[in-house]
Image 1 (spheres, helix red, strand yellow):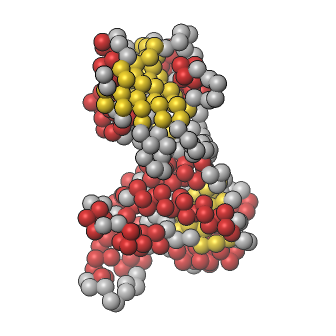
Image 2 (tube, helix red, strand yellow; image 1 turned 30 degrees about the vertical axis):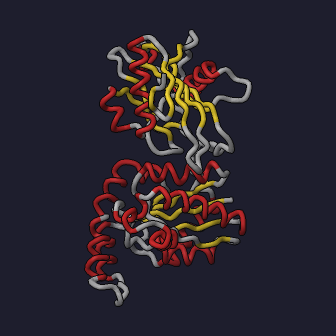
Image 3 (cartoon, helix red, strand yellow; image 1 turned 120 degrees about the vertical axis):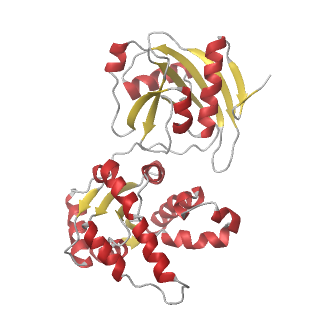
Length: 347
């Protein structure tokens, strides 16, 4: 099962190209995630919708896109052609990682006409006549997204996707270019780890590693949003501390000589669709400069690493992970392990 994700700025021609592409790729189906966005006003209270500037910012939209794509492929098989702008790398991680967890390969294509052509297309775009002030609002909304698109190009987008300059191409010609690139393997499946979603509560072990300034090592996974500690799920029959040591070596290349000491046991409550479970953090100690210089990252799993102060980590980690880190650092200072429930110390 495969997804061909057609990315690009608003006005790049994604939807018209996708409609042509399903005629050129055998056994392919069009899935436009805009349909999911259009259903959200029927599903969510108006107050919740108003809290998000864009429906992509709603976690329910991203999960429904993953689940709907997987359901369509399970029903129809073949190839799913998805025209959708994705400009935030963490949303790309979440959606593509969720698809990878379902053993669905994603081939990422970027339509990249020159910005002058984008602006011309936005200016010429047809807007439904029944929308009050619709023409002005939709065009301005499209223009406002050019700068985020430019920022994504400068940081991650061109490195992640196969670019197609369709500035002088018709939608049919663009689709033919994509079909040829997909068929020849020029558009490779995204190199992203396939981590199956849990089907029950899990035990996960993380290891805190520190530099000479007592900053903690964080890693940036490619398959989910937000930074994380080195670590992962404990395999059946595996000791949690040993699992943390194994994950540290797999993720960073660092071999810990001693079994790390326990800092925190945190019970994460099940919040559907997540199952929760036990989350353990261990103290891997301070790394010497030579170990830091030898840090390695496996391409499919981790994108980057950095050392962060507690204050910096607050801006990098999701809230639940930050609370876990905060109390782990207190436990390290006191040299006494803590038991948490949902990030709150107990006893």
